[in-house]
Structures are given as structure tokens and as C-alpha cells.
Image (cartoon, rainbow, N blue to C red):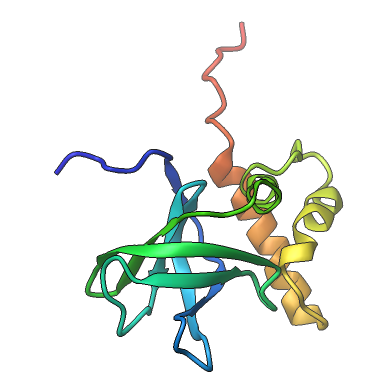
Length: 148
């Protein structure tokens, strides 16, 4: 099946909450992958294609986006981001392409902290691990230059 996405996704686990218009409580899920155009929510249930959802990304729902379910899988659902404000998309862009060179780990943690609301040491240790993995996954592989 040809790729239908307009934006590539990267494999990354983030906490997301999905809200259907009739829900009083969110579905707590994890992303399998995420990109500018949408995400795949692991653990999403009782959704149907073309159903509108509100997506809260990050612990504590730091970023809220409107979405539409595009595909249902055995382990979750694919959600396309639709009808969001330029400001929300700019925040998503900052989250997906952090302006961090990977040199100072603390700078990376500070860049990601607004979307990861933790108040204990274990949470901050997880964030440190996530930031390290994020940088590794989002950077192009180092060119194989031979040292002569």
C-alpha cells in the first residue's frame, strides 16, 4: 500500500490523551509515532474512522490539537491533525524539531519540559532519557568520514 501521509512521522513514545466529543474522561494512550500531520495512538479504543477527537499531547496535556481518526488498527488508531491554529502548529513544530544541538543535555531538557509535567525525580529521569533518545532519533546519521 502506498504511503498516504503528507508528513513523515518518527517513532517516539509520548503520553497522549484522546477525547471524543461525547467523552467525559480521556483515553490515556502512548504514541507509536508522531509527525506534523498526525500520530498513531497505541491503546486507543472504541473509535471509528472519520471521528473527530481532541488530542492532548504530553503529561498534563501541554498541547491540545484537533484531530480526525483515519485508521483503526489492532493496537490503536491513526489520527490526522486537522483545523488547528497556526500557534498550535508552531508549538507542535517546536516539539517535533527542537532547536537543540545535543551538546548540553540540560538545554534539551529545558526545551522539552513544557510538554512533560513531572514533579518528582523519577519523572525527570524519564525526561532525561526521552530527550537523549529524541535527539538520537531526529538527527541524521553522522556521515561516515574516514580519518586519514
